[in-house]
Image 1 (tube, helix red, strand yellow):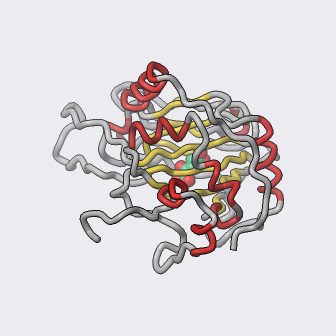
Image 2: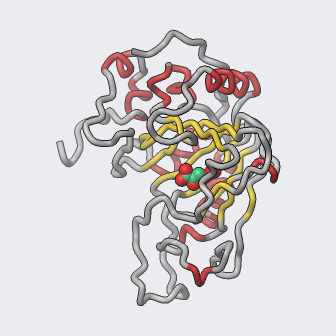
Length: 264
Ligand SMILES: O=C(O)CCC(=O)C(=O)O
């Protein structure tokens, strides 16, 4: 059952086509993008406050709260925040959905320090050299809306530019930190309200948090319709009808309730 909570003011202005094209080009070329000020300041405060009242963990470890849409319609409304949603629709298709809606609480000792692609959708065979061009893959875009400023010492997300073309996990011979075609990682230091987004194919990690503060983010993962949803605990998860009935048709689709398709 969804809780009664306020919906904070969210972005409503649709970006211009020229702006969208520039953002899209950067995502296809580099595999990542930072949108400054993507979440209005009152919404940043709102979600930071909401996190304070959530349990230490939800069965998925201390760094990732899961299925935040169960905690109230404010998290569902966030899925339609502009300019992010229009950019996601442009790249992933109008029938996109989320495959996860997590909350990150990254503190010293629980960071995700290992370099990785979340999944590899088009696998480069071991006998195919990196000089062979594969298309850039963007089927899932992880969006991190930061609720805190993230300077270097708070352990920002790091991404290796262009590595969404690698079509494989990083290997020891890529170096430490790994490089893709000569480029090493960028540290995505941001301000609260900025949104970091990257193809889940890109090699990434969370860098060490050397402070006593926690890096907080609301993290929707938007995907093409064909990518299966991953609502923990995955198998037999049931998204309650109460939650769906409180949503608009568009929100229901974003949560995964689609019209009839090829597989019924
Ligand atoms: O800490 C981060 O920003 C990255 C987290 C991550 O890579 C993951 O949860 O798989």
